[in-house]
Image (cartoon, rainbow, N blue to C red; front, side):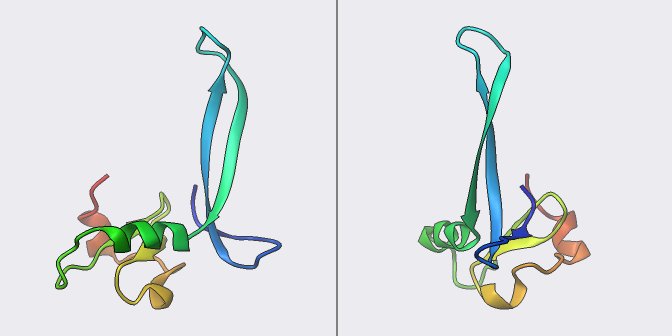
Length: 90
């Protein structure tokens, strides 16, 4: 999902949403949703062997930064720059 602020936690979150299909069909009978703090994405980025001179950002569909390998707290929740969005893989 796009970044949102949790009502209870008041922290930046994202959701992973997947369809649950009826056995043997393509019929969606439920939607399973899990909200997670953006720190979970940051932890994944930090675990990767990223060259020190690289900046990695995870951006939602709306162009908002969910996580970065550098200066994470400064950029989470801010709109990615036009040049970053133009060069985004995904």
